Length: 456
Image 1 (cartoon, rainbow, N blue to C red):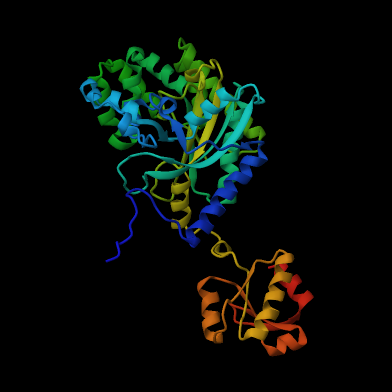
Image 2: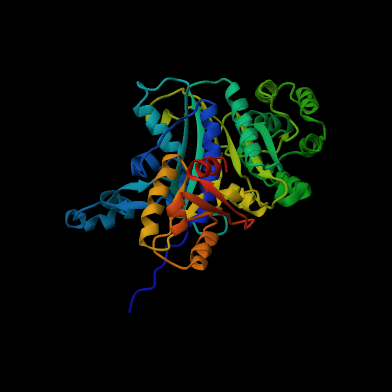
């Protein structure tokens, strides 16, 4: 009995319809990346474990997919190493792993190619990554990351250009309902300073990040248990309840942050980034200066930002920020960078729910040519060659069949036009063209047919 086929948990097949839509999404994003001077980069699916381990914390290390050494490695393994622990044995039987993200391999690439790279280096990368996570909705073991990074400069122009790319990409995708939240890790440090939580910074940020989930009252309760005094909590409440626009909020916080040099520095960063965005023509109606934004604290060092849809229940769809010394772990210190990542899978789900995928992306073939008999087939093949030479995507029905069957095939594949090639067309070189949506038919010469299809 044949084995029933299946897939490992957490991975997916993508059929033609999904691939047309994914390619539309990815091509849109990559097109904007190129407009802003980003260059393509790919890194291998497999990295040395020495490159990956220790870069994502203990939890990340547990989610790495490790690859057994090839060949007869077991015969060379001393199993007495079990006495020394599983980690020591693991090092001898697995030295490589599937990449967990695009950022650490990018840092490795920069260090290995530093003498050949022109800094600032602007790269984009669209590739799958793998994590041995528990599969659930919106979380997979194999998924794509779509990153753009600028490394080798401290200029806040970079942050503004990344925000401009967000605006342009979502405009092209016709996704209008979204909000950009922007802040800085330095502002969070300033907040901790003014409420008396400087020595509890990490724990303070973890609790602050839960505000949307647990509410203000519960958050303040956890802050109190952390040991933050009541005057500090009252001050924090007043700050979080500010409902001013971005400019006024920054000016209000300048007064609050007197005495906190790092807080003032963070405000200057946000103000400058917003100013650059205005110069780039980016309206601020979707940009919100969010004091509770606390993403990636162990990783980011300056401006941080994230994007969420507002009309669909979905988490973050785009995020990133400034990081210092990305390459330091590989021996190249003091190289600052900033990056952004578009969540392809989540953006896909949002566009699908809002019915924003263009209908003409559901098929690739523009015209199908019929096939009624051997004589007509040879003529149809010649016609298909002429159309393809004029950049018209077409296909010939592969075997003689009744008209109903051939038209049904075209309908199921969303092919918008069918060209009839019967004996009359062979004799006259005048072709009947059927619009599959409207049902209308008309006759055209070869040149008229080429011109018509080229403009559709």
